[in-house]
Length: 78
Image (cartoon, rainbow, N blue to C red):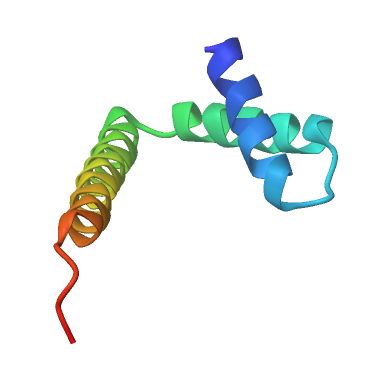
């Protein structure tokens, strides 16, 4: 879990100028807050995050296949 939090902070800090320590603190607070609620709320949070992860994976694969197919097309004669 700590390595995932650190990796998430590195990825997010790539796009912003905010320190990694701030992102790590935000992520830890979000994890603690999600665990402080009932198991039903925690389950909903896990469910939604799993849907987001799966949709991102599918979209990345789709984009890769679309780009790969685009570059494999034969040039058309003018």
